[in-house]
Length: 600
Image (cartoon, rainbow, N blue to C red):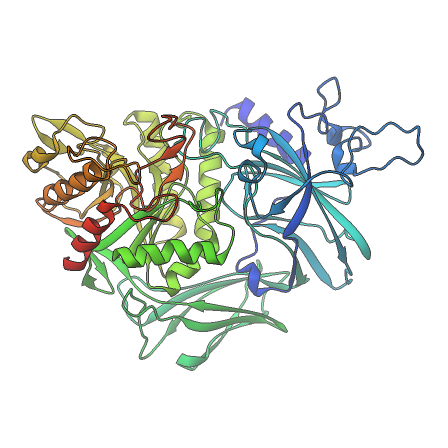
């Protein structure tokens, strides 16, 4: 690490409060919801953050002066050039692009404020929990800065115990969704850059000593041994914690070490394993003293053997579809469990047993509901296209987002695959970057497969994957768009051959074509539903010839918004590769894939 990087990281630590790991399973803890209407102020010049010398108010000697003070004039002649009390409001969770017409394409800073009442108690710890804020969030409680977070899709929290007062309180965020080359994702993506507080905001009410983290998973190569871990905030060496699974008559006491942690193994007799056909979840309780956390956890194994993917020791074909965290019917991020259920129900109707949650961590509620509905999950971080591969801070950012994703979903049996990125170029710095992510995620979790959506090369009609990253991951997983971005004729796709050096399962992470919903053509021309239908018919014939084909997630379940898609007739800023339109209409290709999965 060079001196510039060390200095930068040190400076950032001096500026903000401590960013702790987000509380696991926050909905199972005592909390009040801060969802609802938040006042907002648009601040493209960041007047509420910097003075006219471009110096940050919160770095001044007083720490005051910014919009986060939430001041009102004490007398008519006092000059204050902002006013939250009379500001417009928007819904949280929610993004500003879809709620405020003039902010549809806006990328920049917006201030958001929420007032709330609290009655803090001396023996409690209080944390402000955010499910996701896109992208950079500066957080203030009662006018005092509590910290900053980067990353638009993973949870974070700050301890506000010492800042809360009995009665009226307020929290203010400066949210900035500006794209930057050295961030994750970078400046170039194919999805809408929704800015705002896009997931739940909670004020957690925790005992000073409480269960902070826990994990229970089926031990690899076993069908009845459960390995577990627990961390107690404020726990001391020799203290006891309990893990109970009543249905299995398990009640295990574990002893904490000096760091408040314990690891253990449980042998469970007559354990029913989670699968798409039988998504069995057990009630689990993890407790320390009077602090009890309840969860529902399933147990299963996932592995590869030669060209097979084995779920609970048996070969399985992953009948999947790719998805974005976006509601096609009401523009913006998925806002509710109803939105989530609609999307997953469409996937079930398609015949899927698997969903690829692209290209970033989706809502925790999405993962939990997929698990309940018997849908396996591919979870991904937004290392997308062309990241700043040689930048150490960019790598640290990607690594942190991957860590946060794994820690959040470690107990979700439905998650089968951690993906470290999508469609990245083959070169030495990128291999070091992504190879480092692969090594890191394997250190965090040895119970799941690791993959990435790679790219292919075609030579003399033969598609192959010579990406050295394929040697480090568990699948030959790749995107290919023969017949759409290539010049291949649809009726000749079957002539394409595939050749792979690796003895691994082959997984097609993307293929597809755009179709303007309701555009029909007797000549079956590009952008028609018939063209998309023909592409699916011929793609499936082509892919069936692959030795070792063990799954696919075509692109994509529903049409989604993208600034990269401006064609006024066929796109109008929509990516039209969905099998379902933005009005909920199933296109012809939907039924092609549905029939294929029905007979697979």
